[in-house]
Length: 356
Ligand code: NAD
Image 1: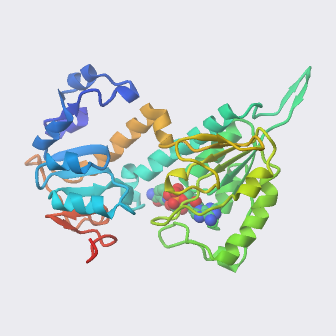
Image 2 (image 1 turned 45 degrees about the horizontal axis):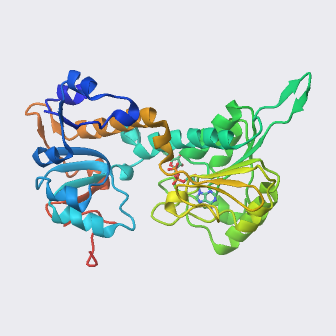
Image 3 (image 1 turned 135 degrees about the horizontal axis):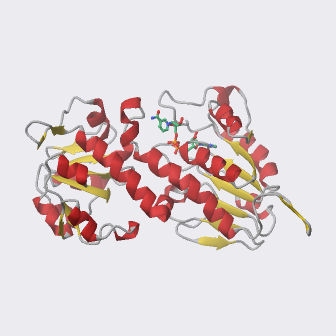
């Protein structure tokens, strides 16, 4: 907030916006903001949000206003078209390229890191045994076995957190580059390492969708392993596609009663058969499948701190320091990668097209 004021902005904060992170309105006011209502967005040249604006909200926005938010555009093409129609210049923060200059603006990383941490905390609280091995006069509690499926930013943090809590950790991914990272965190790597696996990373560092044959081989290998685990955390995503199905119902049924699965991909269709978005489901054989939504939001104050820094860092690149006016450089690669709509049109190459 202070930094926004420092850039020369007049800042309005929606009343109560910070309460989820225990920041009261007075603190925003002290930092130089005016406390207002959501409808004050009508006066704004720049609107900073967590989620994309609804059609009703858009009706009040100024044409030409820059809107920065996580836009979740795939599968929501009508909402993207509505932002174009409203004439706003909308930026999808989750499309920030993963290059060195943009690391400070990378919302996927800042939020996935927290989600990976919180997934282990949620698993530990649903699990009715201790995670570390405990050797006591009364006997020994064995260490919990934790398996992490999908080792991007969230998966790496889940491995590190489970290790800090003393669990015995294994992990799998379809990208070969991950093996060394898993091992460097003190966990074991498990995967079908065939020719397809060796080529399974895009130039952008993301996973490719694997062939049906590979998925079957990988499923057989992991099924046997999962039956012996106490906690499984799944984080596997493929950009622009539904989440890959990694655990079938019969594999869930093979786990011991009291075991816990946390499906971090539940909002994108889920990695686990039987996971329900927003719920903790207990299966007939006593396995809990945790499907919390917006897991980073469960550590709200940390999520908000990092998200605000991400937004500020990007916005700062779009301000002319002399005139203190918005000056979007449409040739900048960060702008090109994230801009969804501009001048009344859908401009992002992944969405612009005759069907919209
Ligand atoms: P993501 O959220 O897109 O996916 C999570 C993980 O699931 C990925 O590791 C992916 O390989 C894996 N996955 C997909 N299908 C799978 C399957 N069938 N079985 C098992 N695992 C599967 O990934 P992410 O966290 O956004 O990270 C993607 C890449 O971007 C990583 O290489 C990461 O290191 C890199 N990255 C780079 C930067 C940067 O340079 N600034 C920042 C953040 C992340």
